[in-house]
Length: 160
Length: 107
Image 1 (cartoon, each protein chain N blue to C red):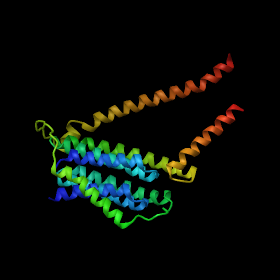
Image 2 (cartoon, chains in turn green, orange; image 1 turned 180 degrees about the horizontal axis):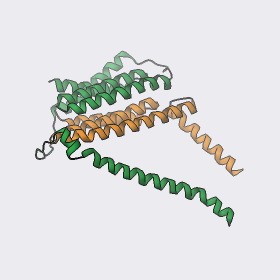
Image 3 (spheres, rainbow over the protein chains, first blue to last red; image 1 turned 120 degrees about the horizontal axis):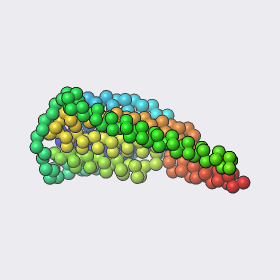
Image 4 (cartoon, each protein chain N blue to C red; image 1 turned 90 degrees about the vertical axis):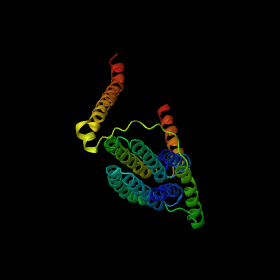
């Protein structure tokens, strides 16, 4: 029951984050979304994911509160309470399919790997990070070569 | 409780915000919602091999945070340059700048 309430709150706060005219209120609603996501992870037993989500969410929100205040002009019209409530109800309705319906997904054979094993014994992150480093190097080299080529073209023309 | 549907609803809300809103901060919030939907789907589908999905989640979070930082920096630069954070006012001024530049190059 708690999971269903948290899921409904997640969708409602996401709807409100999009709906509010004032940037600060939108960021406050986004804070609710991120914190409820962290709670949902923890309720489903993914404690590490919940902690990461919480930490990343706090950082993002603190920056967003500052930049939201800095970037936004004052809106000409204020958001009405009745329309906010209506959007909240819409969000609650939107969360109903997730609570009452299910999509068939074939369950893969259970292959439980602990978080520590995945990180240190199977090098889960290391493999992807190496791939990312190689990709970044490749992109960087291609950009440098492109810039050199672009800069050399006028010089060659001048020489000829 | 089906988390695939939940994440699809979140994704739909994010895409709706991305398509309809004109304020830069709202666009950023929409991108955050899409990222949250992807993370939710990723973690909940990987519940069988719980550790692996959470280990990859660290990478997803760090990438997401880096992307957010770059987007925020760009937003601040753009809003300072054009004096507004409304994208419907920024785009015409960029087009005007481009035509002025092409006219100058033509001369």
